[in-house]
Image 1: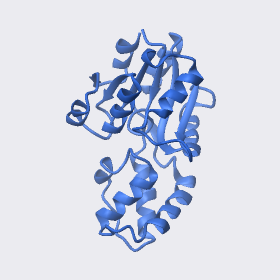
Image 2 (image 1 turned 180 degrees about the vertical axis):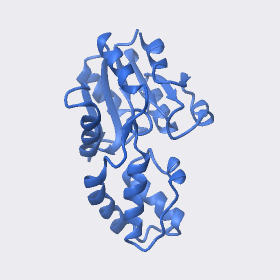
Image 3 (image 1 turned 30 degrees about the vertical axis):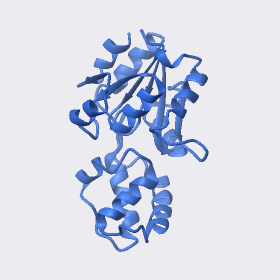
Image 4 (image 1 turned 45 degrees about the horizontal axis):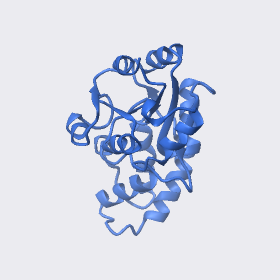
Length: 217
């Protein structure tokens, strides 16, 4: 039995791809680039907002990042207002979280989304104080796949890393959890697929949110 579960946010707890697509397309559009199809964003997301915009610009032809500063600023400002655009929890997530909490398992969120927006999304979807801890990207904190955020959360949750399950949908998440020494659970309802999760050696790969319970309890 694990004592805590740390969740990635985008593609794990929340179906948020449309919000990222909507805001990033707006940002690159202010630089004169055409909108990028939604399905392309599956491989753009997961490594922070700055990397997202760099990938969007490179896809659009700005391989040197000439428009990065302008587009990134526009993205940050627009995303602040529209980070909840069409965002919803994945089916089965609320019930799974309730079951974990009922069993006395501590739950936390660790995201490469900017910290303020991470808090906005989590508290809007699940309520203020529902999660024991929420951690997003901030100056001075290395982004995933650095394990530093997992170590910080372990300390705040007062648990050992080996007693933590780390749940995510991308290679970045699997590298994060494994480098920290946590039990890694790869999920198939998010932005990537089984091949990527297997390549990055997820300890277990699951199909449904309720499958988390059998891995933790």
